[in-house]
Structures are given as structure tokens and as C-alpha cells.
Length: 152
Image (tube, rainbow, N blue to C red; front, side, top):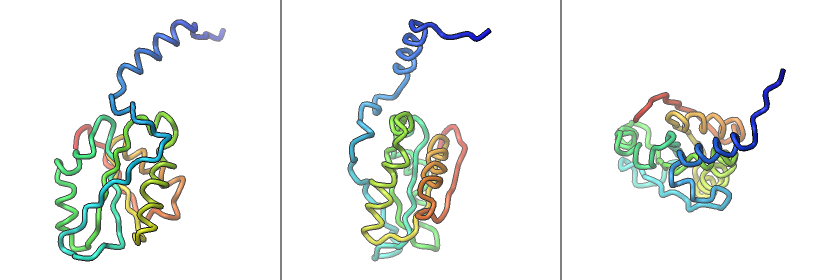
């Protein structure tokens, strides 16, 4: 016997789940977004050829990586690499547009500005996003760092 959910139950469940979504979901992921600012490595005056793209976890803000010291650690590394933190909120995942928006708004935008190698760093849901972007556009991705952490 197959059990089918009643339409009223499905509607109530959808409304309940929508109430849990962060307010940032109001931003329309189908629209081209502002290009995030690049954080340049202070050890080098010139633009690096390498760009590290940070994808935050669900509920994290783009400032989470800075607060957790990720950008400071990257700046102290022996290899000069620039960094960008993407505001990839849950709406991009739900709409199925994350990989395409990262490709258009980040990878291609910065490739046209001289970056050659892209490294994706994702925490929690951002790790899934990094895998998704790599799967869709692996020719552009030089490496992945996936971090499973409840809080960074």
C-alpha cells in the first residue's frame, strides 16, 4: 500500500519549512549578484594568479571566515594567494543555481581579470557547494578543501 501525503499536510509542511529559512533568502539567486571584493595577500603588491573562493555553511555569513582566522592564515602562507568570500546563502542551493552563479559571478568574472587557478574552500553546506561547483566546472578548479564543522 502506497501512502500519499495529503495536499493540506504538504502545504503546512512547506510553510513551516519556509519559516525556518534565513532572511537572506529574500535575495533573488536568479539575478546576477555583485562581485565580491578580493582580499589581496599583503605579502605581495601584485595580484596573485591564484584565487581562493570561500563558500560559507548554512547560516554563516561571509564574515565567518575572517572571524575564524582563515584569511589571516592564508595571508601568512608562503604562497601568495588572493581570497574572496562568496555570500552563497541557502537560496542558491534550494533554487539549484549555486554552481551556475558561482561560475558566472565569481569564476568567470575573476578569470577575465587575470586569475588562473581557483581553489574552493567550503564549510558544512559550503563544502557540498564546493563539490557541486567542482562537478559542474572541474576544468576551472585546481583544488578543494572541505571542512565538516558545525561552527567555524
